[in-house]
Image (cartoon, rainbow, N blue to C red; front, side):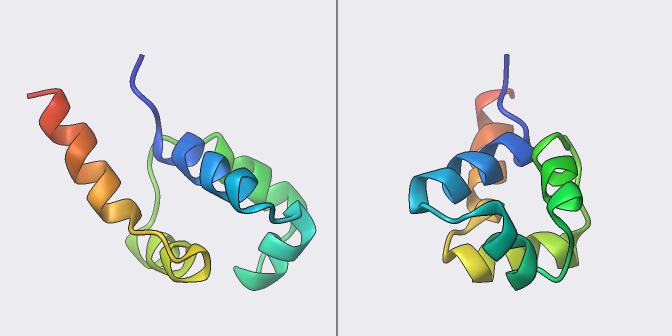
Length: 71
């Protein structure tokens, strides 16, 4: 099964050792919303851009690589 964008974000948050509360504060949402993000397979581009900046990780590149793997 392919990884979703939410799962990729969750893995990076945990890898970097962020608390859910601190991450939520950085992306201007609640803890509940963060868990919702972790379960998503689709995401708004602006939100993904913010998350990429906060985590210092290019999720757009990850999505492109996932897309190439399924062609």
